[in-house]
Image 1 (cartoon, rainbow, N blue to C red):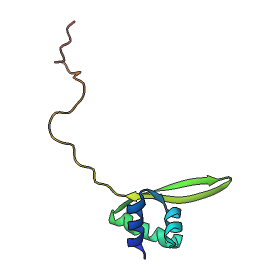
Image 2 (spheres, rainbow, N blue to C red; image 1 turned 30 degrees about the vertical axis):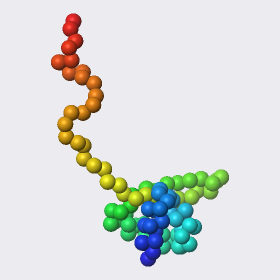
Image 3 (tube, rainbow, N blue to C red; image 1 turned 180 degrees about the vertical axis):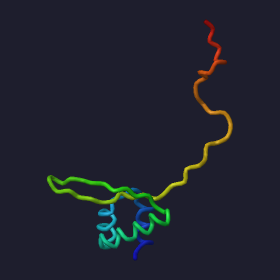
Image 4 (cartoon, rainbow, N blue to C red; image 1 turned 30 degrees about the horizontal axis):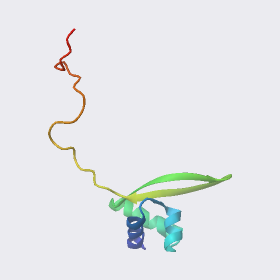
Amino acid sequence: MQTDQVLSHLKKHGQLLDLEIASATGIALAEVRKSLADLTTRGEISQCSVTHFNGNKRVDGFQCRISGYVPPVAAGRKAGSNKGPESGSTD
């Protein structure tokens, strides 16, 4: 499989459809989909299924992007409004 080639193409070009990866790299669509499935199980990419319509023709595919790191919330005070009972409202 050309898993490394597919991964490097996604890193270079960002979020793409499987059809776009296949046409840009010259790899057969079936091979691209096998590589994407392997990369998804390894957790290196995220993918979701999409459906496009060209006229009356239905086109099913996968949209893929590199998995990202989301840092945990930082400790300490958070910005926001003070709508608690101590907010100083006097009636």
